[in-house]
Amino acid sequence: MDASLIEAIYEAPIEPEPWSSFVHACRLKLKSRSALLMFRLPLDGGEVTDIADAEWVTQATRRVYYEQYAVFNPIEYEQMQVGRPYTFGDFISRDSFRQSSYYRDYCQPMGIEHAAVLFLGEANGLRAWLNLSRDAAAGAYRKSELDLLARMAPHLNRALRIYSALEKRRLETQAFRHAGDSIRLATLLLDETGIIGNLNEAARQLLARNPHVAIRKERLAFSQSGQQKRFDEKLAALLEGKATNDYDALVVGMQGGMALSILMRRIPRSGVDMRLRNAAIVIYLKESSQAGTALNGDIVATLFGLKPAEAKVASLLADGLSFQQIARAMEVTEETVRTYSKRVFAKTGTSRQAELVKLVLTSLANLGA
Image 1: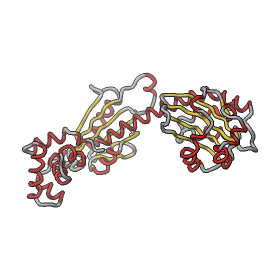
Image 2 (image 1 turned 90 degrees about the vertical axis):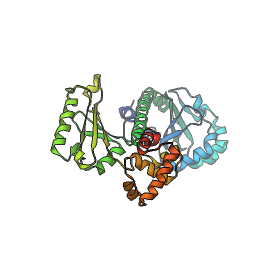
Image 3 (image 1 turned 180 degrees about the horizontal axis):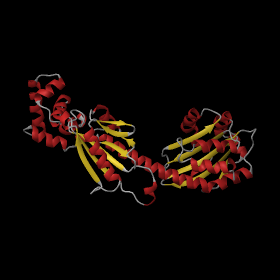
Image 4 (image 1 turned 180 degrees about the vertical axis):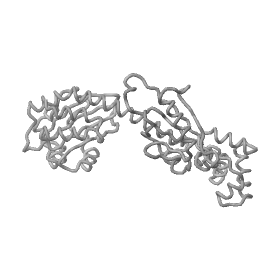
């Protein structure tokens, strides 16, 4: 079998646009007008994702196909055996195919006279089919070409399992990252050398506004040399395994009125992971005062039955602001703030600011989705 095709198969799950290079190479190798890799979730009618390479505009034709013609396709995808190539002839006679409305209205205008389809199999609930098509000039797929597809099948099945596992990890990571962003927890991942490998949106926003910390040369940099030294020492101890625990913490910027709490935790490693330059330290950053940013006002309003202005006052009170500071922030009088606060206390069943702070800060209002 063509070594370049095998290479394309195993590069497919990890390339920037997964499978696209393989689909293109497969189309050229098998002299096809189109090649399409179709992914489907396990339930019938589930979401379908196509990766296509064709001589025509694929986005428009995909929409037309699924909206109007997919139901008339004679190929029974759900009945296919893994690794066995199929053609139109396995499902419908040549004469019946050419007399069908599917051929007349869709295939013939698209130049589709012959097809070859291979079911790659299923991995973690994800199923995949490779579809190829030719026009009349290219002719039907020969036995040698179908045999090539059959020889590719075990490699494609293995690549599908790799791809499915990577996609599962990617989606899980995306979900956890979204959760971190939702609660506005600034999170950074550092490798074994202290270089920042990744950070979430909450971290980007915090670093943009906080005067005590920034990113320089891909590392966390602090405004004061003493703070930098303390951070570097604690980070080195964690990276070198010399720390008493697998975590450490410090606070910086206390003199500037916006103290920044920093929690560093070493990510457990084992086996082959120890040889990989990957995430080694996770860092969480939290400002002591994030007025108006830590709470979701819409959720505050919904949870406690507050009007928008009342929810704003409740959020700012929970952030520790005085009536005078809230009045300036909202551009209203202190008397107006007092009026709103009385309504907030009544609706939340609290009688003073300390009780309100505890109630709001321990509620789901901290989820800032």
